[in-house]
Image (cartoon, rainbow, N blue to C red):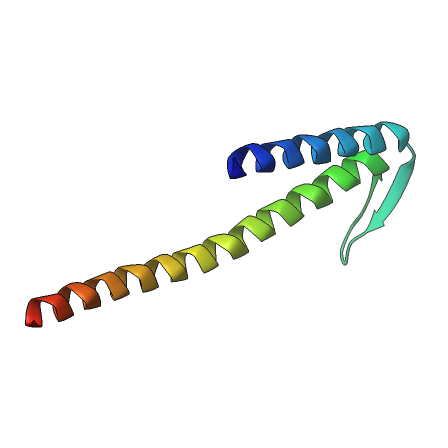
Length: 85
């Protein structure tokens, strides 16, 4: 059920992104520290959305990894304590 809900939210976000992207076709000048480029607003929004998703996934992966190590440690501790009895 949770996976279905996540999938539906993802589809809704993608549809909204496509609608917004199709309406923003103007060129925008991006100034970097050492360079400058022109991109369409829709392309810029897609790049920023992708970067946000990647950063969010990396952050959540770090938290998930830490929690899985804690679970493994606690399971080993429970095994060790149950053998002592």
